[in-house]
Length: 544
Image (cartoon, rainbow, N blue to C red; front, top):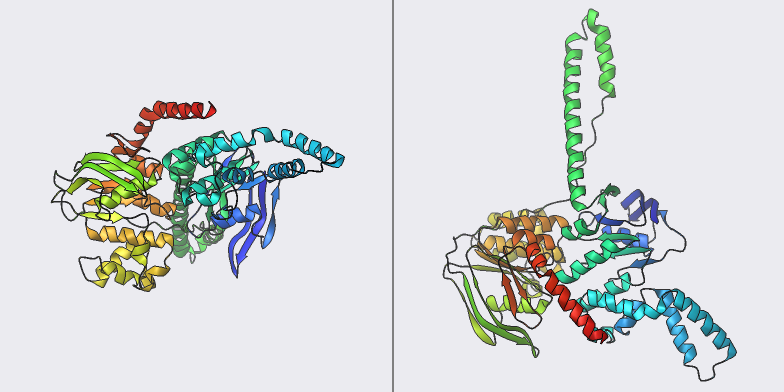
């Protein structure tokens, strides 16, 4: 168990948390939620001991081991992947290194033998003989190829490093597991694997995530941070949302009844306070009036943008035809003879573990890249708006937000442009901020403003939920569902894919595709046995 006891944490004079009391117990998974800036990551750092409280303390059951998902992707570049994962159990890793050092000695003494014997006993007790196979299981589950397990961390790309650090956090069955955005940069298959791992995990988990489906799947409890307080709810994210809305509704209804009662009492007092025969009743009602207190209902600190994509022109029957597209990047074929036809009602989710393949296809369809082979053709009634995964080039300039968006607006009117910015929570002086200093989430909101103002009838999204908070993801999800046009998109948010897509195209590791008219959940169910057979076959081959 881990608990916060009267915890206050101040940044300068501002209290980010004040008098927080909460317990996280064994066998439960807690989703820590709250608006951007509410302090979710800060609270995890306080629990882990990385930050000291201003007042109060954190208590952990004696002897329990706490594990944290680290965020520094370059910290272990000097170590092999396998070593990095096993470091998740620091004591076990120390024993392994000390054993190796002793056995490497040329002048092996009696004292060395005694010490080696002690270490071997502790090593066996900690399941050390299975350490590498357990680490390999975690790496394989998260999509790290077996051939990379003994490479140096510096050889891996950014997404692979994230997965290794996650495997490190999960390794060795920790008693308390703190995960800050564990689904970031994971493909949908890796997220599904992590969901099953956490569902079967028997100890304490505290997780911060913007993925609503993930929180619904794994969480037994929800801890909501709002206005420096943490309210604990039994149940997953959807249960929290329904419960919190019900509580607010009940308080408003109670206040309404109190206001009606106050009005009746005030009217009676006003009518009869000067009447001698009614003076006692009037005095009694004055006392009753003084006792009535309205509940203080604070509005949530959460803010929801309004995302509404409205096509200026209705799309025709001929939308997009892709024929035999192939493309190699750095000598690796990521697309191989890809062909498909897009209809005017299609909302297609592109899935699969090869992120580069999806991004490459979108860049080809938007004219940023030329295919090595094959062709594509957009219909004459179509207009496209593109959300790139890497938006660095978009904001490498000295424009203000207003001027930046004005450059893409068909109506050159500052009031018109600010209307779109206002929907995306850029209010007042925000419009004069330079785009180059914006946060990741602010840049995403700018790009979504650009797509809204374009009036395009074909939208292409490459991982649009990265850097967005839960409220913005919810607003984007609703906007994508409402949109009366064609959508081609890749997204790691399961709920966005499930509720938006009516067609799934999976890009396989060899660059070919599977194309099905279905929802995402139906696609996973239909393909589940095939996936299991693939995993079983590859595992059996490795063991042989």
